[in-house]
Length: 366
Ligand code: TRP
Image (cartoon, rainbow, N blue to C red; front, top):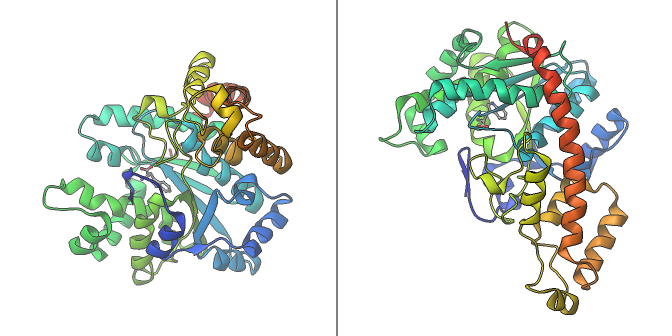
């Protein structure tokens, strides 16, 4: 089950492409982006980004002189974890490659409305903390604007109103599963999330919008795309990622509210080690058994993290898999390798995150 607020069970990505009516990112598109960038991003090579809407058209437009800007965002429900960084790291690659402007939306309104336990003060504060992680990803401060919904609603409200007028309650119910017990704030909210996609068109700039995001956000873009032509805006395109699995098992997605399933960007060295140490692997119950039967890298979260993020070398990855399956490699060793790489990455991120405090003002809308 995949909705913007919940991902449960094993995710069948092929099925999502069919059900959502999106397109698979084919080799031609991967080549096109990589050629422009000068290198193929690991997330494309390993198909962590796997699906899109109109990416082909947006790239074609780009070649004929119609630029695009990027739009992505974060629901500030808590601390940032490594899974959140996936679309942001990729967005930075796209910003560099296409010299694109970026709007980054912090939906402190959405998380306040959706989560009973969160106060508005809390989600607004989370927004500012999460913004440090965004900036630490290295975005160009001259081309990037962070929008805090609550504080910056004046940038969005005109557009959100126009969108809201075109979306009926019955559409919203069908797309998001709203019912009679849903608070009315949430019923309006999809118009707020649609709005940044139209900022440039509303200002009279003829350009496309490309939204890098995890696939669970796609329902929003269906509505956004449906209303666009009627409002004189261009339909935004999207490029979708899979979910990085949580440490507790290969199902669902990493959750900011489940402490042990996620590694947060502010975790210290000890905590990272402890969490990876108790990660779900495909290992056997005992070393003897593992030597005899081998492990199962297909269900192993440690292997998946290496596959998607922390082992770029295809040959080394294959070798690791072979040794795991043949019982030569024990889980402890993989965990140790992953731990070293995660901590190296996180340490660097934390330094950039601290430096970001001074830059925060330069990235804000006003
Ligand atoms: N709804 C998203 C979340 O809960 C936040 C968000 C707003 C977003 N605008 C976006 C995510 C655009 C991706 C792209 O995380």
